[in-house]
Image (cartoon, rainbow, N blue to C red; front, side):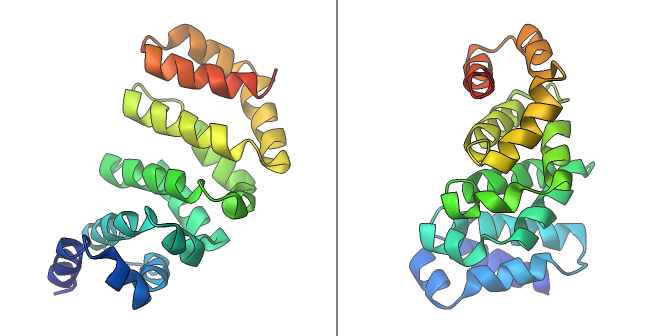
Length: 177
């Protein structure tokens, strides 16, 4: 079955060089675009995430379509799928060439919606991602309108109790002051 093939590939993920050289990353990105059952999608994302730690995989995969697809998964009720998508968006944001992929209002809206959570992990990943992508002028403008001017960041700062999350939030807020 597809799941067993993906599981086998995931078990080989320690051999990232071979997987990248055979062009697996772009193939997985294409597969994510297809309508597939959630368990298969989750396995695809796990495998793709293991590849995205490599800069060449991020270059092969950083596309508007992938960022859009992952951002659309942020509104899913499946927390594993949502958290994995957020983690992958973080990987993609490490390359300045992919920052322009985050310029879409639907992507920004999905990221802003993630801040309405009590999960410390989600907040940490979200603030790390927001800090990196806010260095793009267009993204900064959208985030400024949705998060800073509306007081969302200040309200979050009052609510957050974790020092680690608060430090990350403070870094994000400093970009808008």
